[in-house]
Amino acid sequence: MSVNSRLPGFYKLALDERFAALAEASGADPAALEDLRAERDAILPIADGMVENAVGLMPVPLGIGANFRVNGRDHLVPMASEEPSVIAAASNLAQVARERGGFFCSTTAPLMIAQVQVLDVADPHAAKLRLHEHRDELLAAADEQDPVLVRLGGGARELEVRVIDGPRGTHVVVHLVVDVGDAMGANAVNTMAEALAPRIAEIARGRVLLRILSNKADRRLARARAVFAADKLGGPQVVDGIVEAYQLAADDPYRAATHNKGIMNGISAVVLATGNDTRAVEAGCHSHAVRDGRYTTLSHMERDADGDLVATLEVPMPVGLVGGATKTHPTARAAVRLLAVETAAELAQIVVAVGLAQNVGALRALATEGIQRGHMTLHARNVAIAAGAAPGEVDAVVRRLVAGGAVRADRAEAALSELRAGAPA
Image 1 (cartoon, rainbow, N blue to C red):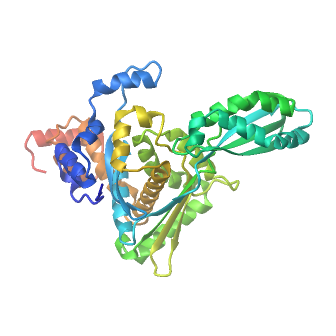
Image 2: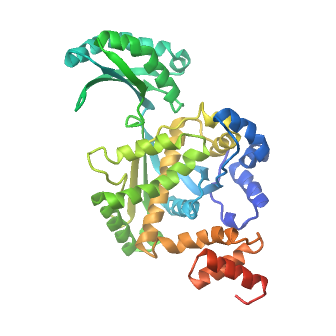
Image 3: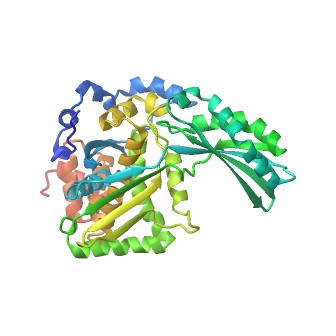
């Protein structure tokens, strides 16, 4: 299936026209994309099976990240986000990245860690060695819990043992490292950890308490690199401003938190759209930001020898294509079909590319006009709708708000009244 991620003028089209353009650009059967706009009543029974005490839905706008080329392939990227400017910024910077080949991405093996905590061990360091002596037995027992995963090439890969001294005692913590293939992996590693717990307790001669995965997924990394031509960003001074803004994030955790939030604006939007676990991904990313003992930036910005901006990003990316909401939620299934990815590694690479694009977009805005101008222009639509503007009135109210330089609820109400009274803009 040939995909063209360029969608010029997409935002100007009516909703039905956008679906037609999306089907044409993706090469997909339009019927295969219908679940992107599934009826509320059709999803409610599915929601009831997904969570307890279900009473309804909290829909989040789903848009398309355009212009993305990842490792030589075009992708139309579904993004679920309520925040104005995220999709526009990511799409804009993806277009700039295309000038130098797009995004170049890679991943490590899909390894997840299950932790088994052992307490009340009289000889923790000797227990550590006893557990290592039973490595092969324990790995084999883990594999017995998921023969399907093993048949598909995954399974338990390593056993690690840590002795952790804390103020209230010593923990012996066993790490079971598992190749989870194309799954996110939580269910697989949790099942293995629970099954091994009694035998681990017996070998260590202690009491097992916790047996659960770690969301510090630092064995499952995704990396993205892109070059942004200086003249397309606005000139050498803009590149300098982006690098200097990045440097503050590298040096100051107060800035780093906001810098990384910008990255997550892009990452979480794709993770949510594809039915993956946003909380797991966010926890892993933020833990990665403090891996050296101090919270700092996840991305890096540099000038290359030609004066262009080189941006790189490395984060844990535990996303999957099998199991969970990715398989049960019709909108998530349609989003995955639209992405046209066949492996979890491909999905992870697209996610990290979007995070990097969004990051550079935010930094460029900060280094030039400031974040509010573009953001508030888009936010003005939300304010206009909240003030009661009908679909045919929104654009006119937005123009009045932007021209007045005050995007506020009271000004939107006044602008709407003026519009309906026939007052000139």
